[in-house]
Amino acid sequence: MKIYENKGLKETRAGFGDALTFLGRKNTKVVALCADLTSSLFMDQFSKEFPERFFQIGIAEANMINIAAGLSIGNYIPFAGTFANFATSRVYDQIRQSIAYSYKNVKICASHSGLTLGEDGATHQSLEDIGLMKMLPGMTVINTCDYNQTYAATLAIANYLGPVYLRFGRPSVPNFTNESQIFQIGKALLLTEGKDVTIVSTGHLVWESLEAAKILHEKKRISCEVINVHTIKPLDEKTILNSVDKTKCIVTAEEHNYWGGLGESIARILTTKRYSIPQSIVAVNDTFGESGKPIELLKKYKIDRDSIIDHVKILLKKKSNQEKK
Image 1 (cartoon, rainbow, N blue to C red):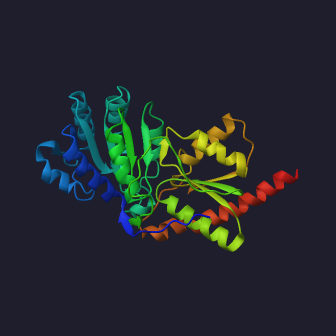
Image 2 (image 1 turned 90 degrees about the vertical axis):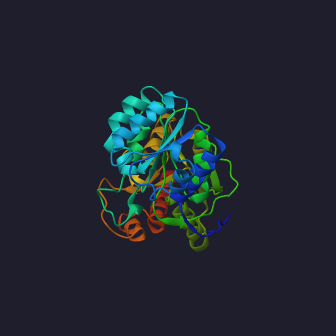
Image 3 (image 1 turned 45 degrees about the vertical axis):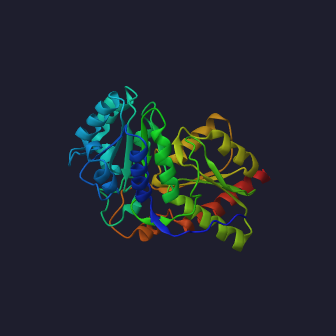
């Protein structure tokens, strides 16, 4: 199987910040807004280079969203940045009414998502945001896996006409995707080919899935097909269905609540396309998080590589039993 090299630990949020500054130098229509978290989202350099195009709104996220919507009417491309929890649930009404309903060209850029936010605890760990945002008509939802992919995604959404929710994280994580990649919105990436089981993952759990696949191959000779779904909506149904046509079973892995996330979207596809195959969802099981170190939280809430391995083993037993009937 193909082995991916960890090229070093880097924050996905740094990929956003670096790409935003690059965009600012290339396109005078790119503007940025932040809700008192400039350093946390690596927006400092943009604010220094382009002070006339940077708006520090303060702890007033609803105002930030409405101002971004107004700027888009003036043909600007607003990037509005804050923590994922504040970027969604705190301002959902403003996003729905001022951005989604009128299809404004606003990029909502959400950092510190999921359990890996870590020590800030349950009040800041957004585990519902993908579900909230994917239900809004016309909203594109992107969840990137490393620095390079976040950088590429930030560039791509600047050229995309329409509202986008871009989700990334706080911690330093393995940087393993291609530095010169061209990000295609709505196109899943086949990372490793396999014949026994499909593992579809998003965000920080893509690396965990690759590590799980490597362990399963080395210790159990289980052949895993790993797919990186960076775009939750629109979802690349063709790539997913082509894979399960071969493997006849699928595990999904996400740093999000079980309800409303990637796993449910794929379950809908399988059902509507009349696929009767075993599926298992690796996700937070309908609970809030807690304060702790990211690696410890992934393990406790059973969304780390070991949990993915356990789900694969159980799923393959179900697949074997189904084939015997």
